[in-house]
Length: 352
Image (cartoon, rainbow, N blue to C red; front, side, top):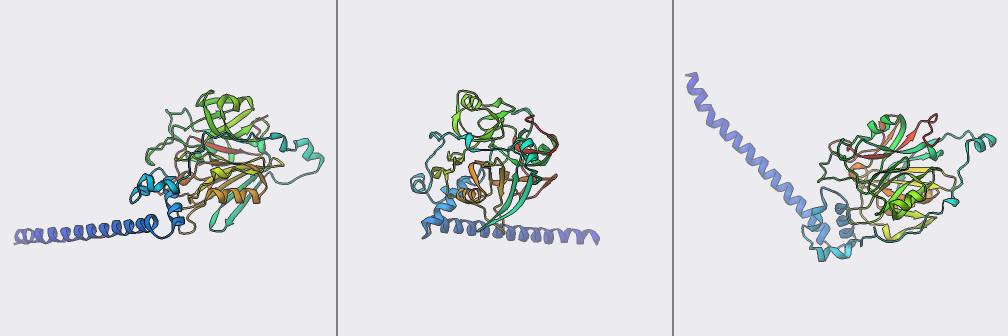
């Protein structure tokens, strides 16, 4: 009798499982159709502005770049996408505009202003964190290990590796549809005045610091960057080849201001030498993200005369006192990355 009940129960369980799977399939189908409908509104709707924002936003990502071509051909996309600027000449940063007070000068002025100031940023729909580092020579470039061999590090581990107190992510890296282990940078990496990745005879979009703690941004060959005293530096361009220079000698680099909305990371410098480390959140219910123009506006608001864009999206993260303090956009947790700008503790001095 128990055997009959078990036998009779099998078809019932099978039918229940089949109904559950059918319901799951219908639910997934509805979600896909809804998503396709939303994308159609963005790409084919009545607002060219919205189309431009959407297409540029997804094209800046590694995983969702393909979405810009669901309903639009490359020819139809062309009016919305900025032309590559990575090979354009840029004005040279005039480092004489930066006046960094020496420790002796600060002592003479009885200046006891803390060397770090953390600010909550709320600018329009943008939200994030700004860290002002008043002693720029305490910022160095951290690296994860041997590129292409050792996996990348999460920024918390990289800051810890250098006994730092804070940090932000830095340059771009090879990212296979968002599945990269962060081992291999893209472009130039200079650490302590030596090229660790890239070569001296290739042109790069460079963001970094010279031995005096002055920010260098612009397009130049690796050797020229070394000749200019670059001590810590990385490269970054977007997937569509938009260069990293945002402000040079107080002038906005308008050719590099895309309209995509995403999480952002950037670094700037004031006339007094203070570095501005900026991370803006995105891809959440609190904020969709920021445009590159938003970065420039915030940098100018806080006095930057030079500024450069860094890797953004799910890589955008700021660490302070051992903790991630912004809302990381990665659904799988903080990304492993090859490089980061690290703020050393006050008693440390990497530039000696």
